[in-house]
Amino acid sequence: MSTTLHAPAPTTADTTAGPHARRFGLPVATCLVMGNIIGGGIFLLPASVAPFGTISLLAFGVLTVGAIALALVFGRLAAHLPQTGGPYVYAREAFGDFAGFLAAWSYWITTWVSNAALAVAAVGYLAVLFPAVGQHKAAMCLAALTVQWLPALANLAGTRYVGAVQLVSTVLKFAPLLLVAVGGLFFFDPANLGPFRATGQSPAGAVSACAAILLFSYLGVESAAVSAGEVRDPARNVGRATVLGTAGAALVYLLGTLAVFGLVAHDRLVASQAPFTDAVNAMFGGTWGGTLVACAAVVSMVGALNGWTLLSAQTPYAAAKDGLFPKVFETRKRGVPVAGVLVTAVLASGLTVYNYAVGADGVFEVLVLVTTFTATVPYLLSTAAQVYFLLSGQSARADRGRLLRDGALAVLAFAFSMWLVAGSGHAAVYQGVLFLFAGVLGYAAMSARRQRAAV
Image (cartoon, rainbow, N blue to C red; front, side, top):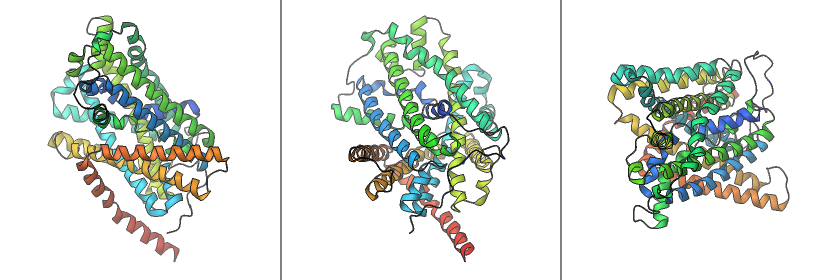
């Protein structure tokens, strides 16, 4: 199979897209990364890892090292191939059409299923602000669909509005998070921390078990690379945005979790359903923390949906340009792949309706678990592609020391990605593989069409 890249040339400013298309600068690209990494999970993470004790902070540190390595690799890859599509572009350049298709297909699955999950999760916080929403299943479903389609409409309005929504939502959601992460340190009580290892496991076992919960806290580090064609000076800004966004998210995760550990007694935190609410109440007293955290969670999830909706359309767009996805995904207006946004929103909406029709404990839950595996496939292919570029001499020329550093980073990022796969669980990997190979039939059809067109 040929490994010659036929992807489109690096995107330049689209002069026909009108005033609503605008390329992202470094600040918006950084917000895109941070906003996609930090969705709504941060509001439950401290309670999720509290049963393991404060050793969970060590697990956070280990994961942060892996995530930063992955971010640096994406920055190097984007400098080498600054094109929209990210992992798809890298995998296809290194290993050919089929690997590129698998990267695009698995990433697309991850985005639209995750969008449905984010919308459903947001309903729980909306019910705090508007109690009537949580009283009827139909109202909950309608609220989830609204949360999905508002970011989709912002995307359809053009990249100018996508960037604006992402910037505003990132600022708004970080205000209460930083209030706890930084302000909470002034109210920190070491007596609340509880034991270092609360489960009786060995240190290595406790870190691994805790990491299984935290592994996917950093999904989204590739966000700027996927949208490289919409970033100004991508060879320079994508790498910077990726590293800055990942480091910023890591700082919020670590400080926020540490602050909550020191504000809420360990036995109470283990049973908490809203740890940041309990932390704010411990800082200032009263019960207004619940409303504040609910607002922050909704803003956080809408911002994440805004960014993920853009990403869900970018990879199919790049693959469609190469004939590996249906041609309709090439449709582009105001700098946004319109068909990709619409198809993704429709699929996510259908999954949301199905979730409320059959209940949360069913196929929907299985599909969400599948995304924990499908999200790592593009990471593995991308890091392997970087190793290939370095060994084959196709990457930018550099001194021996730089090559050794880049090689070490690529190997570390590959190992981190393998750890993500292992953390998915056997059932998720099994279901994910079936989901991946379901797309092979589509690849066969698209390849046959390209072959006929070439004759």
